[in-house]
Length: 212
Image (cartoon, rainbow, N blue to C red; front, side, top):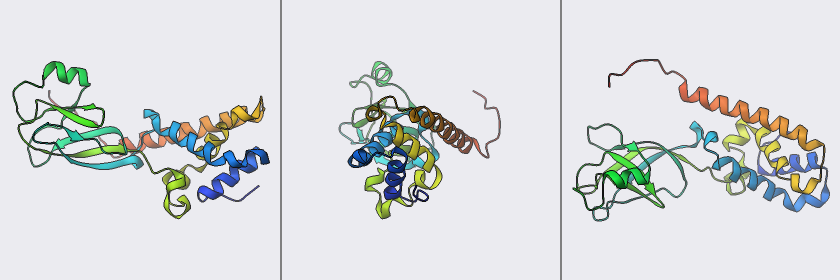
């Protein structure tokens, strides 16, 4: 067995050691990539470490603002320099039903996503700068600088990466009894990860009531 997981290369080595199948060596990058893509698509897995600053402006003519290319989910959004509550996230159908595109132009109060653009309601009366926070898709391990040694999952959840990548090899293993053990270990690692993210999201917060 290899030593500890410290980067992308050592992760693949660990996966190879656990599999003990020399015929799967060429598939190791695929196993890791498939796990990452599957993991990042699940909204239950977003965490504080994926947060990125939002700073975009809507087009004064179309009213649209481009969605960041690494966008996963919106956390919050505000109109910069304007004393107003945060924009309320609604579905595209709700926004268009309440604010038709031919309606009155005004200061936006709602935000929705339409493909590669954010749309607003009411239709913006000019160009606004929208700031806030969104969850960004992390750079894949194979594209991370310095062999991914500083990647958050490598540093904080290498077991999650290991067992997740191992499970991606299941179609090749044909009823291998080790899959059950790897699935159990993965579920434990995933549960710990999600609880850690939930605790981080709530840390330091106090319970208080707000008059509505």
